[in-house]
Image (cartoon, rainbow, N blue to C red):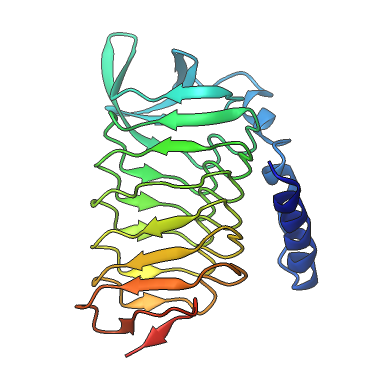
Length: 237
């Protein structure tokens, strides 16, 4: 990670402290993921191919463990004599995994990425999402090294601070998304361009706060609320 990004992170922490909005340093720097392994695993938890899951009926949820390197999430996994569909990345499942570099879930039928799922994965550079994904939770990719990510057309919900202080350079939001939540792309120092679809009817005033290089906000011509801008600010029609 570059020196400039580390400085930005430090400034962000101080700024949030000043605003009485505390950043959980354990979550950011990966000291809390050992909690899940401190006690004996629950009966419904199991591992396949180095990935830890929790069984939920006919479905499997990816849960917390110390992950590193390149991760592949399959469509199904077996527990005992049952085949389970992998449908969710659980809350904080990969949070603070500083050695995680990439994750490919494009073959899985994942519908949801939980809150803080990849928060603090400071060297995560590549994520491939499935075309079944409906929801990305709060803080999901907070403080990651993602320069780009392709959001699927199926996505309907993008949580608060989802890409807060990430390394995104540009982002194209899918048609079907209606809301850009508070600080979704705040503090993205490398962000230069955002494409907003016609379906978006609500954008938080601080959605792009402290993203100094953002200049182009391209809004679809059929959007009834907002219009494009070249000053990095949100403009209503």
